[in-house]
Image (tube, rainbow, N blue to C red):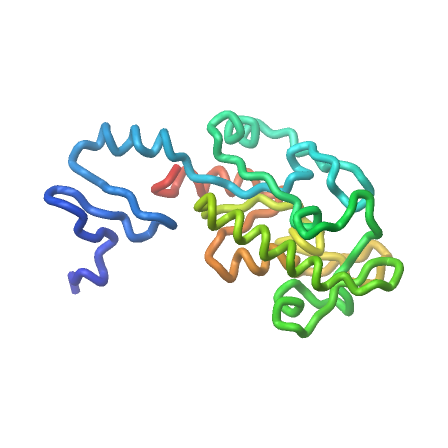
Length: 207
């Protein structure tokens, strides 16, 4: 049944509409040339783990640079918003390695059912939650609908995280930042899924 609630557009002005599916609203008018010009000037932003961009912010003071043509193009287009959640929370570089304890995941941490511990035995849960909140605030401030994050991290992992034993073993799960972003509607992709993100951007009305 056709009803205003089922339509993807909201009335904006005579001959113009607002697209409801976007993370922010913009006018769609019969002047499609103007619309595409607007899109070119306002490309969809992507929150990206700073270490993937060559910034030496990882726990051991290194980067995890992702050399990829898609990433290079997105940078030139001004789409990239860089952040290391752990540095945003005030943790130093270098710092002790940290993992989510007891094979838990980021969602459990956000619900108060899991902890993030470093390899000295210190509980760093509060810092990781603060870093996730900083990432969400930055994503929302820049209207990021997508995120490209380093996998395996207790913050940024989106496919897998280390199991808390500090023995190099991983299990399926997500980090604290990835979990919080997903809770708020941000589509999170692992760094190994950059081609999938590219496809998603092409399919998106914001690409």
